[in-house]
Length: 391
Image (cartoon, rainbow, N blue to C red; front, side, top):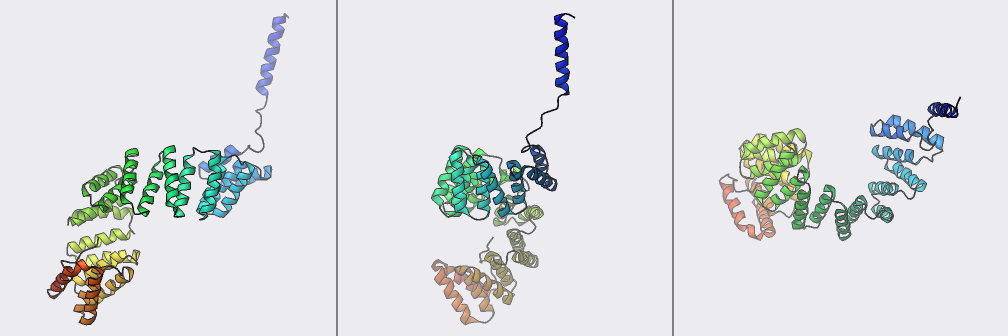
């Protein structure tokens, strides 16, 4: 055989050997990581925990990924303290991994330990200064500690790093907590420009415009929100409220009917439905809806106010007195409540207490003297059309 032939035989032999060679096994620390990940993303947590247990037994608890996923599962199960301990173990096994520190800080935040969470997030920021999540969460922690200046600083830093809907929403909420509605509107307006199809942002901005009395812009943004999410109950409730304010009760009720499928136990929804029936002079239906709202939110003074008003209109003075007294206990600085209470007491033949209620109403609202006279005048005529209805 020639030298060339011998060389070809050797090469063929080497090829056969390479084809029969076993695939190299993964290191024992990582051997089951792919299987743990597969079951975790499938949400098959029981199988996942069984595999994690085997992996940790083989590695004597040194497999970082197995411990990490076990901690995530504990958090999903509501075992926050246990998840914190496991994430701390991950941070010890690999202290240079930013994700481990972020998860430790997240667990501390969920436990209400905001100062400790800030310290850990600050350590994580040293490893990665351009992490949007770290800046955002630092802002949220400072917001819970009522340090609004620091919170705004970190939230704005997060937006400079990477713009996210969530950061815009938290920053807008922060401005509202400070009572700065104009800044909140500007923040949400920028958010809508960045994410024009986000129904929640559009709804929030529409509600702010509604609060400021800018009804055209409010209706526009609420309409856009319903275009992208026809079942957005907040937008439906707000749009229905606007129609209700303009006495278009039937259209408002059609809107509320849609919202009732999404949130059948919403106190504001049943309050508004009740007042729609009140506007249509269907008083029994109004009381039924308002009592359901009162059952769902027994400490909401507006619902109690409306129940008192409807009972007063139906000349059920004892029931009106009950609900108006309860509303005053919740909202003792509201002059209109004392006016309605005074009307009720007058009809209950208690002129002394009625006079005290009128005086209290005047002392709380000096500009309300004319309203008191109007209420007193209509009291004798058994008409309460001038009473303000709280939507």
